[in-house]
Image (tube, rainbow, N blue to C red; front, side):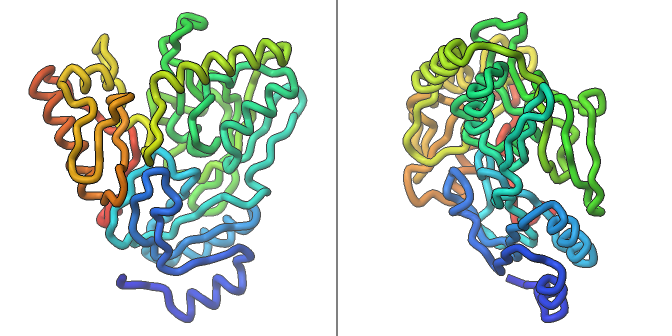
Length: 318
């Protein structure tokens, strides 16, 4: 790895940064796919002020800055990455609390923790997030959600945009900003939060009896286990459901007879065709090649271009 880490940068980090720093850190262990090369620098800040100090330190370098949450929905190149990766795993970023009639959740909080906290306080509305193994920050950036199989409020999808009221972010200059719902631009599996460091968000939920909430949670769990039960490393749904099609990406892939297809050490899941799993020892190249094969097959049969839902970090991803 051609590193820019030098004595001067090391001195600045030690002087102004309170958290942990690792040099040439392998990223595979931080992703649900268990695939990924080394990041030039890897930081675990202790609080918001630590992030701001870090951004000022790194501002004079040529390193790309990325935040990693639970590492789901992410495919990382095996090659060395010219990047400074920040992981918000300190307890200060995982706080969940009541703020008047809203729930505040830090970016590092697990979605499962948000659901459980809300249930314990008699608040409903976030149960659709059951089984999504991500963090609040990542879920907001990608507008995580699910198909609305119960047709609640006649919405085809339930997503973070339905429950978020305000989001607290830090820009690349270290300034903290709060965006109202009207300032947020959510689309299917995307938002205008990309490029910011999400610190947390305030969620608008509704009062309900904990028993009723638990029944909804159980219903979502049954659906998850029936349609998405995979035991091997995966990144969740690989492709977005295409616009203008009555069929989901998984249904299109299955109609191409690709369900269960094996390519090297990766496989289109035999349980859910929009999942690609790591059978053990898979690399970035195998995963990307199978993604392309699936895209080509769907295009040839349906003339529909499947767009990846997962985020892909490549060695030349500047």
